[in-house]
Amino acid sequence: MTVSKPAAGKSISDRKQHPAGVVHESGELAMGELAGLLGYALKRAQLRVFEDFLHCVAPVQLTPAQFSVLLLLDANPGRNQTEIATTLGILRPNFVAMLDALEGRGLCVRTRSPNDRRSHILMLTDKGRATLARAKKLVETQHEARLIELIGEDNRTALLAMLAKIAREF
Amino acid sequence: MTVSKPAAGKSISDRKQHPAGVVHESGELAMGELAGLLGYALKRAQLRVFEDFLHCVAPVQLTPAQFSVLLLLDANPGRNQTEIATTLGILRPNFVAMLDALEGRGLCVRTRSPNDRRSHILMLTDKGRATLARAKKLVETQHEARLIELIGEDNRTALLAMLAKIAREF
DNA sequence: TATTGTTATACTCTATAACTATA
DNA sequence: TATAGTTATAGAGTATAACAATA
Image 1 (cartoon, rainbow over the protein chains, first blue to last red):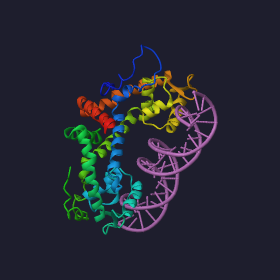
Image 2 (cartoon, protein in one colour):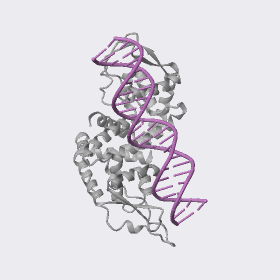
Image 3 (cartoon, protein in one colour):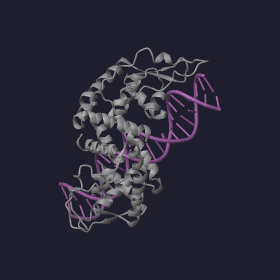
Image 4 (cartoon, rainbow over the protein chains, first blue to last red):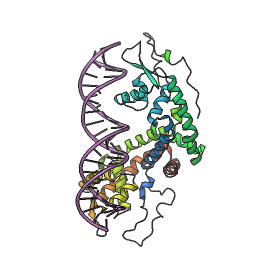
């Protein structure tokens, strides 16, 4: 129930202890109960992970969002824009420009569905599959590999399971 | 991590109209390797947690970012804007409007430092402390409580530790 | 000259309404 | 009438440059 719990017991004691009362030092700030706030920890970790992802995948010029689109197209060929977008939590209007960029780079194609001429069937191109394969290699061997090195494979699996559960059931 | 490719030639033909039949063809999409991507799980979990935070703290009208500012001001009275902002990863220019809003609501005050008249010393007001106390209660008893109910207190502690480590050392 | 708070600005994300062409 | 893709737009969030007051 309590939100307080200094993570490593380090941040708070870093601060020079003045006798009770006031004032003004120029050292590190006390994180206080911020260290026990899950949302804050989630946000900071997410920013750091995305930053590293961007750096690792820079050779193929894909953002995390673009990478997720390519992954989903690969796993679900022949779906339309609405299905792909909503599965990723992307609103349909915002998905248009994203697809324009990917299609403009020749990574995927829109084709009118013969069954329902309103929908655009989405498919990876060969170049899209090649780019995705290269990106996956970079993510595996650099991004996720460093993460496993940091917290261990078992912890990474447990972390992934908890995050998925939170996203699904919280 | 390396996941097999989707079975070719299966998914596309699923999508035709069966006039008399049940619609078992346009079911859920396969998440594919997306399920193993830490960044994706982090992002989705973070969005969900922030959404719930916003809902739980709605009675006192504080965003996660505003809450983090009040927490930090409470733990570090008498600091200036640059110190508070950078500790939270907020750029100084973007902190101005945030403070305007909080000060406009009477939750904190800026006062010129006597030592260095360039800086603004920040302090919570009584109203700010009261609002923060009320917000903390809501976060503890509703937001974090539900999270513990979902994954358990030990898991929450472990999760927090891993996220902090990632944010710090990754 | 350097720093604090600030303004201005721009770029990305996200969110909603409304249009078009189909159904 | 309803739906898929699209356009336009508005709002957050975030990033950099530059200016006035102060050091």
